[in-house]
Image (tube, each protein chain N blue to C red):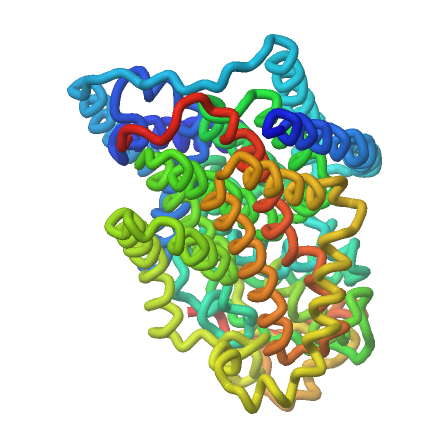
Length: 451
Length: 145
């Protein structure tokens, strides 16, 4: 456990260094204010680096992490000292009772995560895909140091199409622990949820009433599928958490014109794209959804898109180079009218099955919350933000339907196997956006500055 | 109006948490109660037991294969709890459990054949050595390079 916690302290240190380096926190005041983002930024960045290094058989261990953290921290803190300026105070006026309720909700969320910790630290790998796919990849990266061997390239180890951020992160943890421990590694999964909570607060607390920040993050983390599925060692919830942070970053950039949330959001979307294959699709849907409302800022959006492409490119090259097959569907069929027509009988059951999973009571009131938040944003004349959120949700849902449409697996079986997992990103992403949608209209300050 | 909308959203978020928090808390508590008694060996073997795979046999395999081995899994017919056929289930578990040995699809690529309810002799290969622990067997073709 000590090694895993040490590795995570180093992820945090890397994040602290990256905040000024990526201009997410260019000066001391901003660094202090956005410090809760550091862990999630560090995990996302280290995960991306570890996944890329795995492609060329370079393992990331404790020594490398220490060196990386020291270098990034040194460069970052040096840069923050040189910067100047102070953060404009834009916190919406909020009565004391409202702040107290928000803080209480946040404390409850932390209590829930602490309770989960005691379960996660003793939970072995139990669910099939948790060990058969993700556990096998993580262990193989730990054993072999990289992904060029048969475990990642041979048909005997199908499916091969899953990108490597999560197993690479876990393999780094194993190296830090000095042992393959399939039980303790569950704590890493829980720390992703802790990082989500902290980053969510940091992204919103100076623009959105704390009441909404606290209650929304509690609603998301308390939803049964989140901690339940996260404990399985499947990548769906980590994907959802990265996408949700990416959406909130993009949404804040759209609403306020500050540049730093776009940088943070793009990093999280990049991490999402390397967590699961459909992460790229959710990330592209986010950029596509924001584009109609930010065409005047096309340079910034273009840079974000290029950054996302740069993050994903090494993995895509690896897939092409090794001819890794995608066994569940052929993406080109999505553009084949004859194929789509021949399989059109799958659309209705796919849509119905996904809607059933989205509207299940396990999610509590997250979907009505998203709907109410959209209405509130429209009332506040935050049309662009409401349009972005609605468009992302629609694109994501249609994209999921399309994937089930072109899948070669019988539709009933496909929905039973994965329907409850594939909607997680959609519901968690929409839930996370709700705080921004409902609260940004209350902000006293309008868009100003470019930080 | 905007303030009312925001308050309604906060109320919905709180209501959502009120609906789901107790179930999530209970599920975590139940998991803890069910798992806290497991010993270190149980935790390692849990993926196999949870899917009704013959973990004892795989421990026997694991003791007799090593890094660099290419393993062919020869398994009896049947099904697993996951609904996949038993040979696929056994091969999938071997991929995970026997690491850092590698599982291969064809016996001619293997350095060692492991049998579950089947005799490696069926394959007509020439073995250097053979170990049995009924119904499991480990037949070595060559040492790993």
